[in-house]
Length: 116
Image (spheres, rainbow, N blue to C red):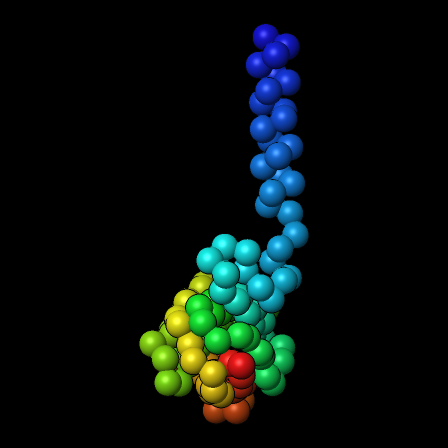
């Protein structure tokens, strides 16, 4: 019984350690792509410009305030509410637009994704 409990505790500890950290990193360790996190609040994103390397780019949208969604012009990336979308992007500049009307400042709620 003690061995079973000890084994369970070791598995839980390893799982917790594997899940910690990582979300704030720009690079995704799985698949060699980039993950860019956008935090949306009413009428603005947390940055005016986000950067990623060409190739597989994942955008993760988090709603800090209000309910938002995004579309990325020139791609098929679309997120409604919180979530993720991935696309293989070539170098260039892509406009990110809030796709869910969120109030008077909605029209100005844009940012750029610069892929190098």
